[in-house]
Length: 257
Image (tube, rainbow, N blue to C red; front, side, top):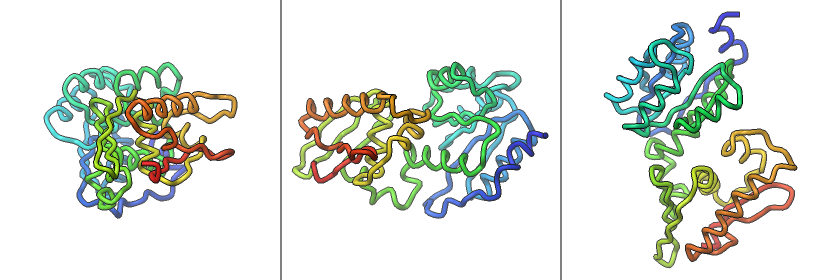
């Protein structure tokens, strides 16, 4: 089966970003010409401004010389592989990077995240899943692109700084409480804040924050929630901001601010 068929045989639609205020600029770095072309076509159909490169070195030069909202990055490429690309890019820029690769081993994923990847998608992938991951990254890193961002709950009460992992919580009484979080804590709190007052299941949070399948015997998520709650208390906020909904998951309760 060709690479193009691997990408297309599971997909029948690729959604448009109907609520975007401006075009997001995306760079596709993929050495397979067929896959590169297909990705660019699908992204342009969704009204993105798309550039492409066919090896890591050319892609790095483009990434450094232009401002992109997101980079889609292959790993196995000539001139410079994806991990080398990431390491060099992170010396100068924090542009979000979604790694696309056939290397799905745990060690490869860990290396990708350690080097600075924002998300990781294994080939062959469903284009609908790619769309959802692109949307999630853009909403998290470039909320100004979306006309709903200014009204979202996390924008009213939470100010997120990705570079420092700091979060300023603006309470209704006018006080500002600062939190310093780890990367996972930061992503977890931001995910809860973006859907404040909604219950997010453990399975959803494992998939979208911890990037692995949920197991009822795995207490990792509970541990991270506990640590965030302790930091809330240290910062002068209530421990009940994140509610446990028995048998379901967690909810960020804004009424506790």
